[in-house]
Length: 129
Length: 129
Image (cartoon, rainbow over all chains, first blue to last red; front, side, top):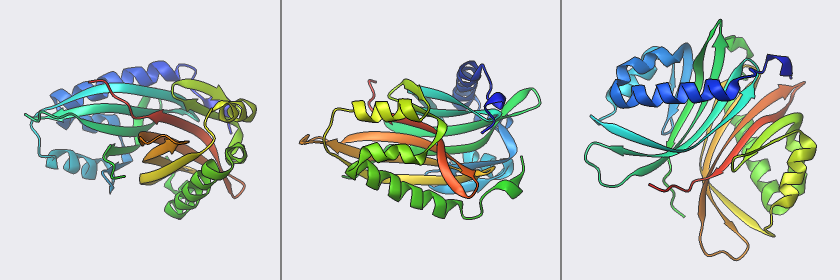
């Protein structure tokens, strides 16, 4: 494990990413393309997508007009040349009265000076016990 | 990013890990330390621990006798020399009647053919909206 490649400022990178990503999701989701590496992977509610084009097709296919997100927790850890981000929160779409819990995991990797998403997993927190 | 370094059997690696990890958690949690790399990182409910010794101390400090974990979803994605795992589930400790939702993320890395946890983030999914 190459500890020397762990970004020293991983928490700051994580926080900045979070702010930018969720703001873009809520105001202009077409622009989310800019956050992903070309060959990034997204698993959205179990559907696995590979590459920017497929990822953006998925975002365009989502049936809501407005979404609002409330982040309960965001945890950051350094990885080799990157940052792991684990998010827990609630979201509300359009005129829904009920918020839905969600969790997502991002792996960011550095490419030159900037960080891009290489792995992303999203799930609604729905359980049947 | 070098996709040649993605393990082709990442889903199987992920499934085997998930089974083994939750099995061990429920029957002999101190043995969980064997799943971690020496310099692995664990963020448990926001508190960050680094290294096997610290991780073992954390597991020993958890005050329940018994835990039952039911995994609702486990998503797997390949990365360079590793697997990203995102788990969503519910757990019950001791004689508690209430199941608690939890989510966790694992980053497994390949070290000479064996996969070990290098990053792990655990959170209970509790929200105040």
